Length: 263
Length: 344
Image (tube, rainbow over all chains, first blue to last red; front, top):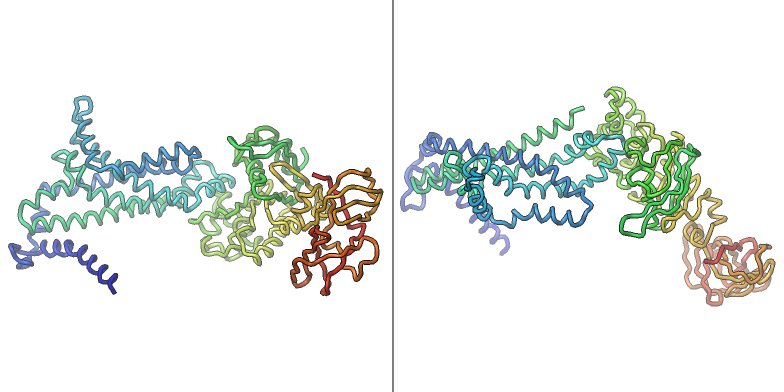
């Protein structure tokens, strides 16, 4: 009985802010009462009309997609290298390297970026590419973990040996075996990356330029204004994170299906 | 130049270790099934990898159909390999798995589909082409692996402990299937196993490996009847191995007494290892008569068709396999059942 009570209480605690945000986003007025009074859709319309939010929305989307692409392009070969290397030292170095950003607070990375990229030699602070690079460093470990674990589970090395013995060339083995066999973990890895990137605040807040601030960064400003407006903006962030996850799923699924059916 | 697959004085040592393969020569004739057996770590999987091309020998030559392939790629060797855990491609249907070697060779879809169906029929899986490997039983997956390894008409077949992942009943049935399929394709094959029943029942020839060296290669009955040494005798079939010293032209002295043998031509005083197969020992009704000894039973196992009994004969352990249901108090050793092996 007690564990069930604790679970219920915890779930309520978890859900309450989301429910309140949702309620708040639809409330007309919310001042010193438990719940807001009146029902309106004006907050959503205001957020949708706000130019800085519109810009942040598309920035976040662009950064998330680009981060996903970077993780795929860098992460897949890296995962493969980590998985296939026989060298124990190389293995542990690679492992440490890709786990480091998990242990490293995003704030530390952001300060490092501030220091390095505000110099005259590398004056890239504020560019969207630097933002994407930062998100990639933060998200890559999660992608790698998902893919490497799947490689081990599948026994990918033996599958490749089999394909080689059956006459498969390296590119054929990659397109016919590696990519399709890993499609589920690539997909779920990209969903995680998209969700992380959309919600990322610490690094984005310090590194993003004024014109490519991401949605969470702009959102913070909203809480200095009307409550309903801030709630509506937050609900939109939730929806955005969800949409990015779907987009990631769709693109990875498409890529895998393409590789699978091609010849 | 002899054989579909031939190893000539091949040596390979794993970097930083002492394990490997040493000065091994072995030829597999076209259509022949050679079973390679040995305890774990004896190098039998290494041997398979050297033939397949996953490993390169430090010395020696690997030939396939007479061609030197020692430094050829895995791909170009055109060998069908059945892996221990089958290594079926999980995202492909059974038909796509079997057609895969044809697909990478650029054969058009209708032709490769037809060949895949034909091969599936040959292994007894007609009609299952649209299934995924995960939807099949272990025995069926094994058949798919075989079909995939054969669909492109390879130059030889290599099987790495192909039956070890199956349950006991399926394993015995699949043993006959592997044999039938290999025969029907008339393809040279090397099968790796650590199961002596599998080796004895399947092989045209058995190659016994120990610590990376080939101890003996001979047909099953020859290897059973005339093992090269005590290791082979103990590894293939059960064996009573007793140290002895030759004491006459047809006599050997053992820890439990003098044993009459057939005339053996070994010099008096030479140390030998005496081999007596348990099924060659006879239960005797009385202690009278030549080569008959009193024994005590230490363990009696009833196995249905036979009984396997551990005995002590003046402190020396002996094992007998007999059809007799009665008490065992005396055993007779027929002189022709006594074999000499080199003492090690």
